[in-house]
Length: 501
Image: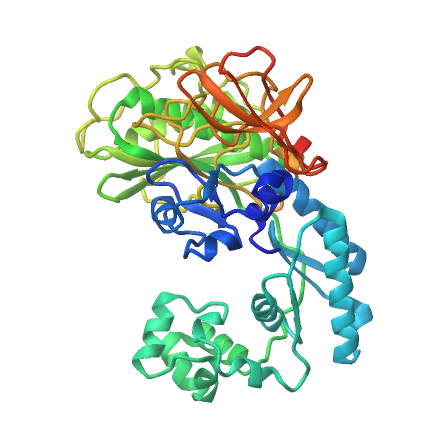
């Protein structure tokens, strides 16, 4: 899919269809999750800091992600792909491989026709463009789809693989990042063709036996890796980067509670249980400390997870203020064995789940100080906390993002920019959008709104007791903007999916 998140926003908010759009967090540390092609013309890119992207593209409309909506569109695209081929490997919400048996042995022209039909079917199903690449292996198909963007197709006929790959930058190959690129540049290798001419033993000595051998074969256009369904995610996590570094422990407790709860929603939405809870804390000096604790059996009990997360965060706090905090669940299982006693219950000697002072206010404990009674950690060594992430991703229901600076109306105290991780093709039903009601403290730009007579709309701007809503959806075409009092009782939060159909 082309500029997927931004394209979905332009599809469901027709006023934005020809305008530059940036999707991502709203805080000063936020990152761009997607940039429309109109925004890319200014130099804005995904994974760029939102502040830099806004400087490069002053006219851009900045919107928070709506992942429930992106999941719904992705599922429809996958349905189209499955109708073409029973063999499908979904890489992310906006990318997948298929290996249609009907295309085996066909001439390049016939494959091109099949790719064009696929693009037309996707556009008919979801109203969005996509780019399709075809080749003798996954590496070639991926490179071809990238070269075909936007809204195009490229088929690499057998026997022409090295001709196409040769002049491309070596970074185009899967598995070559900045470090490997720098090592290759030192010996004068900057293109895939130059890598292919090296002796495989030299590449293995430079990049390692396994990686070097694989990359050399890919540079030669040889890729026999099968297209196969991805396995389930090994972890489910959520983390938040604060707008300003935080040392207030009550705020940190609220954030860890929100992250544990957000990850729990994804865990149960995917029908999984977890055995291990991990807390990650990044200090203002960018030091990272992780603490984990494992249960005797996998569970889905939220109070148990909350109790462990709150306890572990005390053992992970740095001497400096905190920049990021996250919670991950690992040891995933399809079956849960519920705890006899919640580890977060007063009977177990820990604060209740709804206590706002579960971590009492005050300075962080000095290094080497005794841990609170009942605390525990497994080995105390840093642990991996995330299996997959989508950068800068506020939750669909407006749940936690960041802290410390003035926030848009309707945001929680830590709202700004967050990250969450889960299997990237988790169904939209596992991404709850929260109660459909008016936010208690106001609205933020990008919120979905429902009005009893004007229908579905979205917030263009809010402040000074007023909110401007543009009433439109995919089916209505560009709509009109109307300004209301922030507390107008006829304005209610809407399900983002209603903007799609």
